[in-house]
Amino acid sequence: MGLFTFLTQEIAIDLGTANTIIIYNGKVVVDEPSVVTIDMKTDKLVAIGEKARQMQGKTHANLKTIRPLQDGVIADFNAAEQMIRGMIKMINPKKRFFSPALKMVICIPSGSTEVEIRAVRDSSEHAGGRDVYMIYEPMAAAIGIGLDVEAPEGNMVVDIGGGTTEIAVISLGGIVTNKSIRIAGDDLTADILEYMRHQHNIKIGERTAEDIKINVGSALSELDDPPADYIVRGPNQMTALPIEVPVSYQEIAHSLDKSISKIETAIISALEQTPPELYADIVTRGIWLAGGGALLRGLDKRLYDKINIPFHIADDPLRAVARGTGVALKNVDKFAFLLR
Image (cartoon, rainbow, N blue to C red):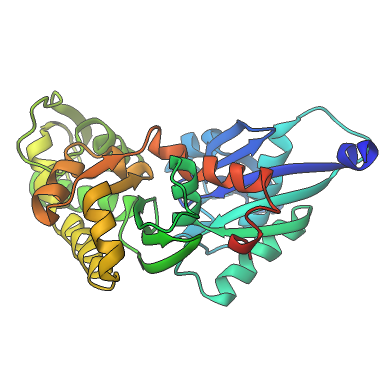
């Protein structure tokens, strides 16, 4: 048995639209943006993760920065495979005589079609996966938060990622109702980009819009502990001369309002489909928020005001799904009924 353990490497992967997290031996060993830079002439990988993100918007004609996942699913098969392979190499960068066989558990959006699931499986197998298991993101998030998913009681999880928002009611080890919408972190970034262009006549890139979201992003126009204005520099759209614009959290709350309203509608829609006994449990226990979107200032309060059910933010929401995937990997036999 010892020999086979040595020959097999067990890893859990949260393959996200914005970030990819890999857990090995119960620890987070890779936490990098899901970005690759490829040399267009040779089709070789130039950079991966944070290095590739730093190149975003700054490459010349021969280099292309690609985000292999869009809306939670693989959009570029070749780039996704190269990214998974490259990130697995980060676990133990030392050269080995052989590559160990990989046993992987990967999380996928609950609204994935069979074709999309197949694409993730194929990419993982091409990157060296021998045993590849899939787990739905909201289920992984619930396990990562520490909820008892096998208990006969309703737990509701809202996982706001980069490409999709996953809403699920979980009971007795299964997803009772679920809603997967393609409105998430990337859409909020796009809203900010659009707002800056229209309102301030300033041209900014995706990275700057992301920085604005992190620094002054808010779901409410009145916060108890408001962040300071964020200074944005860029060219004026009309004159191309440099301008400096201070951006307040109130402005960003206004620009994100439409997208957040769509997330609210999706949560209400999922609650409408929930059986009454489980609905009662959810009202008592509250709803859990996970994913990067859970970090948006005032989001839990806004959702509570709208839906009148308490919202709890998971500890380290960015890694909740990855932690749950890691737990599923450790207990593959116990959670066999959850894995595909």
